[in-house]
Image (cartoon, rainbow, N blue to C red; front, side, top):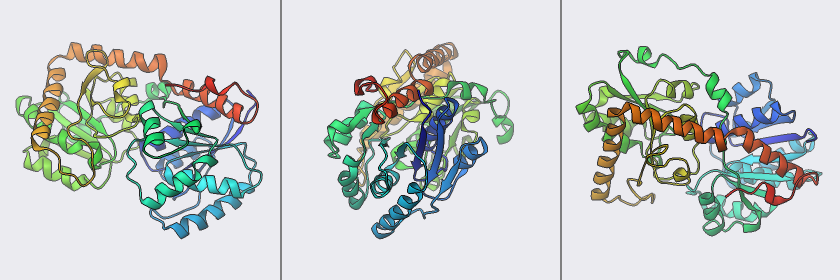
Length: 400
C-alpha cells in the first residue's frame, strides 16, 4: 500500500485503555511505513511522551480537562487552522471530544480529508450537549468504528448514529511488545514474600469498573489463603471508597492501590490471575493484554467480554454484579450473590494452578490467532485506502 500521512486525534494521552490502543496503532502504522502524527487536545501525558520518545510526533492544543460549548467551538476553529497547515491524508479520532472537534475542524479546513472516528464503550453517560453534537456531526465521519458488535448496536439504537456509517473493527494487542516486557519485582516493591500470589485488576477507578465488589470478594478468599493479595492499577474518583471498603472488610493490608502505572503489563506479569469485575465495557485493552500475558481470567459478561472469555476455555465468565444505571440503587440480594460468585471463581482458580495455566495458555492462543494489533492495522489500511479511492470494497474491513 502507498504510505499514508495519518493524524490520530485523542482527548488526552494519560494512561487508559483508549490511550494505549492509540499508542499501539500509532506504532504499528509507523512500522508499516506510514507517516503518523498524534494530536492530544489536552496537555501531553505519559503515553504521549512515550510515543514522542519512540519517534512519533506528538502535539497538543493544551485544552483544560473540562470545557464549555463556547470553548469547544473556539478550539475547533484553532484545530482547523492547525490541520490546514499540515499535509494529512486521513484524520482518525478517538473519544467524544476528539471526535466532535476533529469533525468540525476537518469541515472548516481545506481540503476536507477522509475522517474516521472510534467509539470505544457502551457507557454513554454524556452531557446532553455532547450527545447532541455527536449526533449532529456523526455524518461528517466517513466511517465510525465500533470496537464490538455490542458497541455498534448501542451507537445505532440508543445514540441514533447513522447505521450506514458504523462498522465493527475490534481492538488488537501488540503481542511482540507484550512479550518484550519484563515482569516487575512487585513483591519486593510491596514488601511481600516471594511466595505471595497476586490477583490483579487494571482500570480507571470508577463505579462502572466494579472494583469495589472485587475488594469485597477478596475478603473470604484472603481469609482462607494467607498468601493472596490484590493489586489494583489505575487512578480515579473511587480511590477513597476502595480504601474504605478494604478497611471495612478487614483486608486493608491485602489490597494495594498502586495508582496509574506506566508499567501496567509488567505488573500483570507479576500476577497469577487477572480479574475484570466491570459493570459495563466495550472491548477493554487491559483484558487483551492480560490474555496475551497468559493469565487466567475471571470477568463479567459485559460489552464484548463474552467473545474473549469463555468459561472452561479462556477463563471464567460471570454475570455482572449489578445492572449499571447511574444514580440507581443496586439490589442488595443480587450484589451479595454476585460478590460470592466472584470470590468463589477466584478461589477455584487459585486452588487449581494446573487449570489456571491451561486457561491462560488458551487465552494467549486466542489473541495470537485473531486479535493481534497487526490484524487490526491491516484492516485499517484497507479502510483508509478505500476512503482515498485506492483500496478494497467496504466489506473487506467489516467484522462482526
